[in-house]
Image 1 (cartoon, rainbow, N blue to C red):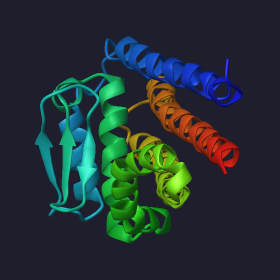
Image 2 (cartoon, rainbow, N blue to C red):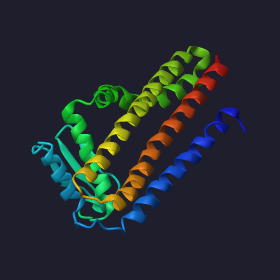
Image 3 (tube, rainbow, N blue to C red):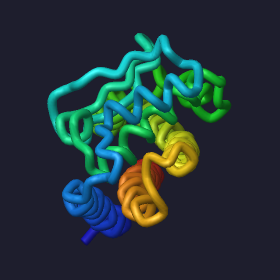
Length: 226
Protein backbone atom coordinates (compact mmCIF):
# COMPACT_ATOMS: atom_id res chain seq x y z
CA UNK A 1 0.00 0.00 0.00
CA UNK A 2 1.19 3.53 -0.78
CA UNK A 3 3.10 5.11 2.13
CA UNK A 4 1.13 8.35 1.83
CA UNK A 5 -2.11 6.41 2.35
CA UNK A 6 -0.70 4.44 5.26
CA UNK A 7 -0.01 7.59 7.28
CA UNK A 8 -3.66 8.64 7.07
CA UNK A 9 -5.13 5.35 8.30
CA UNK A 10 -4.19 5.76 12.01
CA UNK A 11 -5.65 9.28 12.02
CA UNK A 12 -8.88 8.00 10.45
CA UNK A 13 -9.15 5.24 13.05
CA UNK A 14 -8.64 7.87 15.76
CA UNK A 15 -11.39 10.01 14.20
CA UNK A 16 -13.85 7.08 14.11
CA UNK A 17 -13.06 6.33 17.76
CA UNK A 18 -13.58 9.98 18.74
CA UNK A 19 -16.99 10.06 17.06
CA UNK A 20 -17.98 6.82 18.77
CA UNK A 21 -16.70 8.12 22.12
CA UNK A 22 -18.63 11.39 22.05
CA UNK A 23 -21.84 9.64 20.97
CA UNK A 24 -21.64 6.86 23.54
CA UNK A 25 -20.61 9.20 26.37
CA UNK A 26 -23.43 11.63 25.63
CA UNK A 27 -25.99 8.83 25.42
CA UNK A 28 -24.75 7.36 28.70
CA UNK A 29 -25.08 10.58 30.67
CA UNK A 30 -28.20 11.77 28.89
CA UNK A 31 -29.96 9.30 31.20
CA UNK A 32 -28.63 11.03 34.33
CA UNK A 33 -30.72 14.00 35.42
CA UNK A 34 -29.49 16.97 37.42
CA UNK A 35 -30.95 17.42 40.88
CA UNK A 36 -32.41 20.93 40.44
CA UNK A 37 -34.27 19.68 37.35
CA UNK A 38 -32.96 22.44 35.09
CA UNK A 39 -33.03 22.06 31.31
CA UNK A 40 -30.20 22.92 28.94
CA UNK A 41 -32.14 26.02 27.86
CA UNK A 42 -32.59 27.08 31.51
CA UNK A 43 -28.88 26.84 32.20
CA UNK A 44 -27.80 28.66 29.05
CA UNK A 45 -30.25 31.50 29.78
CA UNK A 46 -29.24 31.83 33.43
CA UNK A 47 -25.51 31.81 32.68
CA UNK A 48 -25.89 34.44 29.97
CA UNK A 49 -28.07 36.65 32.18
CA UNK A 50 -25.64 36.31 35.08
CA UNK A 51 -22.90 37.59 32.78
CA UNK A 52 -24.99 40.58 31.70
CA UNK A 53 -25.57 39.14 28.24
CA UNK A 54 -29.34 39.58 28.12
CA UNK A 55 -29.20 40.38 24.40
CA UNK A 56 -28.07 36.84 23.55
CA UNK A 57 -30.95 34.64 22.42
CA UNK A 58 -31.34 30.94 23.24
CA UNK A 59 -33.16 28.97 20.54
CA UNK A 60 -34.17 25.39 19.85
CA UNK A 61 -32.98 23.70 16.65
CA UNK A 62 -33.75 20.28 15.23
CA UNK A 63 -31.10 17.57 15.33
CA UNK A 64 -28.72 16.03 17.80
CA UNK A 65 -25.33 17.34 18.93
CA UNK A 66 -25.43 20.18 16.41
CA UNK A 67 -25.50 22.79 19.17
CA UNK A 68 -23.61 26.00 18.45
CA UNK A 69 -23.31 29.72 19.11
CA UNK A 70 -23.84 31.97 16.11
CA UNK A 71 -21.99 35.28 16.61
CA UNK A 72 -23.68 36.85 13.57
CA UNK A 73 -27.06 37.11 15.26
CA UNK A 74 -25.90 36.51 18.84
CA UNK A 75 -27.86 33.30 19.33
CA UNK A 76 -27.11 30.11 21.24
CA UNK A 77 -28.83 27.27 19.41
CA UNK A 78 -29.47 24.05 21.32
CA UNK A 79 -30.51 20.75 19.74
CA UNK A 80 -33.37 18.39 20.55
CA UNK A 81 -31.20 16.38 22.94
CA UNK A 82 -30.10 19.47 24.88
CA UNK A 83 -32.72 22.24 24.83
CA UNK A 84 -35.44 20.59 26.94
CA UNK A 85 -33.29 17.88 28.51
CA UNK A 86 -32.50 17.87 32.24
CA UNK A 87 -29.55 15.50 31.88
CA UNK A 88 -26.07 16.39 33.12
CA UNK A 89 -24.86 15.81 29.55
CA UNK A 90 -27.28 18.44 28.22
CA UNK A 91 -26.27 20.97 30.87
CA UNK A 92 -22.61 20.50 30.00
CA UNK A 93 -23.26 21.13 26.30
CA UNK A 94 -25.52 24.13 26.98
CA UNK A 95 -22.94 25.72 29.28
CA UNK A 96 -20.24 25.08 26.67
CA UNK A 97 -22.19 27.04 24.04
CA UNK A 98 -22.83 29.82 26.55
CA UNK A 99 -19.06 29.83 27.06
CA UNK A 100 -18.59 30.53 23.34
CA UNK A 101 -20.97 33.49 23.61
CA UNK A 102 -18.90 34.84 26.51
CA UNK A 103 -15.71 34.41 24.49
CA UNK A 104 -17.25 36.46 21.70
CA UNK A 105 -18.46 39.13 24.12
CA UNK A 106 -15.05 39.57 25.76
CA UNK A 107 -13.08 39.41 22.49
CA UNK A 108 -11.24 36.20 23.33
CA UNK A 109 -8.04 36.32 21.25
CA UNK A 110 -8.07 32.77 19.86
CA UNK A 111 -11.71 33.14 18.80
CA UNK A 112 -10.98 36.46 17.09
CA UNK A 113 -8.08 34.90 15.18
CA UNK A 114 -10.22 31.91 14.18
CA UNK A 115 -13.03 34.13 12.95
CA UNK A 116 -10.59 36.27 10.96
CA UNK A 117 -9.32 33.31 8.94
CA UNK A 118 -12.71 31.61 8.62
CA UNK A 119 -13.46 33.06 5.12
CA UNK A 120 -10.09 31.88 3.78
CA UNK A 121 -10.45 28.48 5.44
CA UNK A 122 -13.97 28.12 4.00
CA UNK A 123 -12.68 28.91 0.53
CA UNK A 124 -9.79 26.51 1.02
CA UNK A 125 -12.07 23.65 2.01
CA UNK A 126 -13.97 24.07 -1.27
CA UNK A 127 -11.15 24.78 -3.70
CA UNK A 128 -8.04 23.04 -2.38
CA UNK A 129 -8.81 19.52 -3.64
CA UNK A 130 -10.15 20.57 -7.08
CA UNK A 131 -7.01 22.68 -7.61
CA UNK A 132 -4.74 19.81 -6.59
CA UNK A 133 -6.53 17.27 -8.79
CA UNK A 134 -6.53 19.58 -11.82
CA UNK A 135 -2.90 20.43 -11.21
CA UNK A 136 -1.86 16.79 -11.00
CA UNK A 137 -3.76 16.01 -14.20
CA UNK A 138 -1.96 18.79 -16.06
CA UNK A 139 1.34 18.43 -14.21
CA UNK A 140 3.36 18.30 -17.42
CA UNK A 141 1.85 21.62 -18.56
CA UNK A 142 2.79 23.63 -15.50
CA UNK A 143 -0.10 22.39 -13.43
CA UNK A 144 2.14 21.98 -10.39
CA UNK A 145 1.54 25.64 -9.59
CA UNK A 146 -2.11 24.74 -9.09
CA UNK A 147 -1.07 21.84 -6.86
CA UNK A 148 1.02 24.13 -4.67
CA UNK A 149 -1.80 26.67 -4.52
CA UNK A 150 -4.21 23.92 -3.46
CA UNK A 151 -1.82 22.71 -0.76
CA UNK A 152 -1.48 26.24 0.62
CA UNK A 153 -5.25 26.59 0.72
CA UNK A 154 -5.59 23.24 2.47
CA UNK A 155 -2.95 24.37 4.97
CA UNK A 156 -5.24 27.29 5.85
CA UNK A 157 -7.98 24.79 6.67
CA UNK A 158 -5.55 22.95 8.95
CA UNK A 159 -4.54 26.24 10.60
CA UNK A 160 -8.21 27.01 11.26
CA UNK A 161 -8.72 23.61 12.88
CA UNK A 162 -5.62 24.03 15.06
CA UNK A 163 -6.75 27.45 16.28
CA UNK A 164 -10.15 25.93 17.04
CA UNK A 165 -8.61 23.67 19.71
CA UNK A 166 -7.89 26.34 22.36
CA UNK A 167 -11.27 27.94 21.62
CA UNK A 168 -13.08 24.67 22.36
CA UNK A 169 -10.95 23.79 25.39
CA UNK A 170 -11.50 27.22 26.90
CA UNK A 171 -15.28 27.06 26.36
CA UNK A 172 -15.40 23.66 28.09
CA UNK A 173 -13.34 24.91 31.04
CA UNK A 174 -15.61 27.93 31.37
CA UNK A 175 -18.67 25.67 31.24
CA UNK A 176 -17.49 23.40 34.04
CA UNK A 177 -16.46 26.33 36.23
CA UNK A 178 -19.80 28.09 35.74
CA UNK A 179 -21.85 24.97 36.37
CA UNK A 180 -20.03 24.38 39.64
CA UNK A 181 -19.92 28.01 40.78
CA UNK A 182 -23.63 28.49 40.17
CA UNK A 183 -24.42 25.12 41.76
CA UNK A 184 -26.32 23.90 38.76
CA UNK A 185 -24.42 20.62 39.16
CA UNK A 186 -22.99 19.18 42.35
CA UNK A 187 -19.55 17.59 42.67
CA UNK A 188 -20.80 14.15 41.61
CA UNK A 189 -22.60 15.53 38.56
CA UNK A 190 -19.63 17.61 37.39
CA UNK A 191 -17.65 14.44 36.71
CA UNK A 192 -19.95 13.09 33.95
CA UNK A 193 -20.33 16.60 32.50
CA UNK A 194 -16.54 16.80 32.27
CA UNK A 195 -16.43 13.42 30.53
CA UNK A 196 -19.01 14.53 27.95
CA UNK A 197 -17.12 17.73 27.16
CA UNK A 198 -13.82 15.85 27.12
CA UNK A 199 -15.19 13.38 24.57
CA UNK A 200 -16.46 16.27 22.44
CA UNK A 201 -13.04 17.92 22.56
CA UNK A 202 -11.49 14.67 21.35
CA UNK A 203 -13.36 15.00 18.05
CA UNK A 204 -11.61 18.33 17.38
CA UNK A 205 -8.23 16.78 18.16
CA UNK A 206 -9.03 13.91 15.80
CA UNK A 207 -10.04 16.34 13.04
CA UNK A 208 -6.67 18.07 13.35
CA UNK A 209 -4.85 14.72 13.25
CA UNK A 210 -6.67 13.68 10.06
CA UNK A 211 -6.06 17.02 8.36
CA UNK A 212 -2.38 17.09 9.29
CA UNK A 213 -1.93 13.56 7.94
CA UNK A 214 -3.67 14.53 4.71
CA UNK A 215 -1.58 17.69 4.39
CA UNK A 216 1.61 15.67 4.74
CA UNK A 217 0.28 13.15 2.21
CA UNK A 218 -0.42 15.93 -0.30
CA UNK A 219 3.06 17.38 0.16
CA UNK A 220 4.59 13.93 -0.44
CA UNK A 221 2.51 13.47 -3.61
CA UNK A 222 3.56 16.89 -4.90
CA UNK A 223 7.21 16.12 -4.16
CA UNK A 224 7.07 12.89 -6.15
CA UNK A 225 5.42 14.65 -9.13
CA UNK A 226 7.88 17.53 -9.16
